[in-house]
Image (tube, rainbow, N blue to C red; front, top):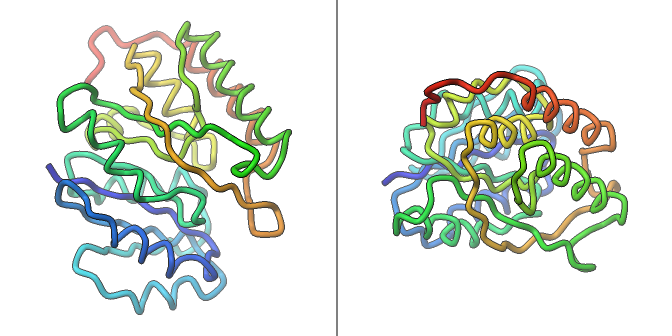
Length: 234
């Protein structure tokens, strides 16, 4: 199996070099490729990516910022692996956890795996950020009669063809809710494994806001009311 690690990047010149180094240093249990999409960065991110040299790395550049969902779509469209996982470039997630997400797939226990953050005091920058995340996750559980622990997690691992079949339209952070809503609507329940997490604050460049939470709940409601395909592709 080949795993495509998809990394959307926007104005991360202070972290992108470390993010690449960490992602490529992991001892993965399968072949990997790292597909980085520079989503119209206006700082030195592009120059740093241009100097990166690794045969497993491919860089794609958007001429202007289009949003996380759009960056992931570009990466998915060019992915060459059978499976994919999203890894942000902000160093909040530890790529050393990716083999743990792969384990249930490689031993046949799961097809879709989410990394579940525990949000201890050391891993969250704001009470309201955690409550917002829990609120969005609860909304998904109520609407779809499911029980998942972390809808907004970046670590979503699944077959590339499954993601492509979802037809994700959200161009920004709403893609997280849309992906989960469409999976749950197809009665695909993500298998969850605990992961480590270190949130950064606003002063460090945290981009998601309360408006994204409101949008996520709206998207979940939209997906819940849509008719489920009679024979959804998997």
